[in-house]
Amino acid sequence: MRISRAHVLSLGFVVAAFAMAVILYGQLPEWMPTHWNAQGVVDGYTPKPWGPFVLPLLMAAMYLVLVAVPRISPRGYRVERFQGVFEGIQVVLVAFLFLLNALVLLGGIGVAVPMARVVPAAAGLVLVILGNYMGKFTKNFFCGIRTPWTLASDEVWLRTHRLGGRLFVLAGAIVLVSGLLGGGPVPVIAAVTVAVVIPVLYSYFLYRRIEQDRHGPPDDAGSHRSA
Image 1: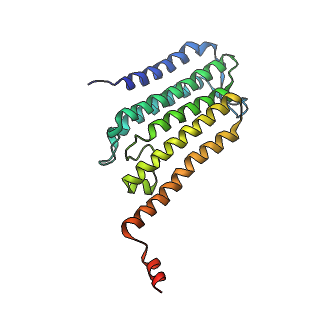
Image 2: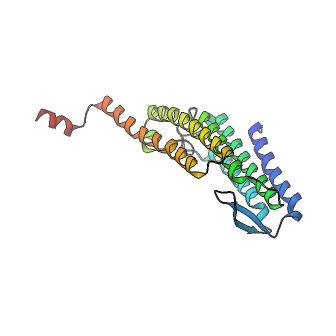
Image 3: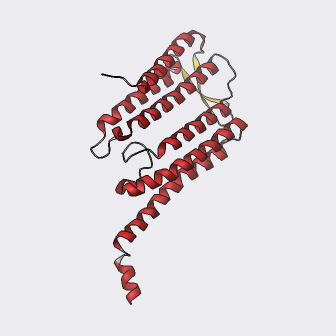
């Protein structure tokens, strides 16, 4: 069975994450710093032996889930229809967790890592990439803007994802720049909220408009006018 390049890259990141944890294990403290607040200050720890392997295990679990998704998708909602895009997303998400793993391990051995800048900047880059992919999603139950109205209409799905893709790219750029400049959580939360909420509302109003154009106004509206 042929293994795609995306799977090779994803597995490579997972193996490298475990290898890094093993190599650095002896230099890591008994209580690993594993969480930083918005100001980049450590506010959470995990003890050995789990601390160094939390993110590698999470990466492995995510990879297995993403491998399973195409096999469990119901007919009519197959991700195989955009398999290349789906595998690209898989690599991006696993690579993001690999970066987090590297930063956590470096922080554990005493390297001063600017978490408050690097993590938001990396997350912004992920959003930009996802936004560029979003317009290529076909209808499915696992990724994309899955509202009742996008799942009910191919046209609503397509147009909502085109809009959502642009908004995700814009939000990602804002998050990226905010992270690099140390802008804090407010621009990040605002940008992501707008990018998520607007497509949901758009899908609802677009669906209603399409249904009215197709079937005419509701009966009660027609009765009100004739009265």
